[in-house]
Image 1 (cartoon, rainbow, N blue to C red):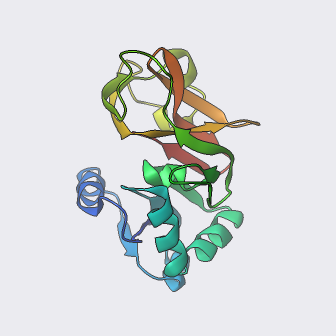
Image 2 (image 1 turned 90 degrees about the vertical axis):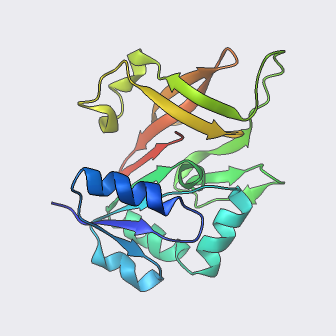
Length: 187
């Protein structure tokens, strides 16, 4: 069984993630400094909050380079919510900011100019069923499952990235992706 390292950079909902991993009897620990990445087989980058502060925290704690080096060595990574957004090349939340650059694409404000389009996108949504099989994370999960979203910014990607979308304001937005050894979920 793989031992999972949760990247604790000060921007994640650690209690919820801790409880979920315990419930499925997963071996895990916390990474709070760059030297601890080599203790784990795979990683979870959780996140709650703004892109700017998430990236600043990773850089200030010098965890960004260790994470990038580990991923280049083939270790697997799951980014959740803000953690997923940090994996992209750039974000326009609060001005243009550089991300980790692991995923081609950018993060932009949800702005579809629809009359009844609520931002933040908050609540339970279904995924587009015909896309679910393209991401290994959903194997064994009922295709009719719903997922809880809370976000005002959404990622867009291109080039050989397996994607699953959800519908918000009559537009498909990225809900999850798989790219080489990296997975991400917005919910």
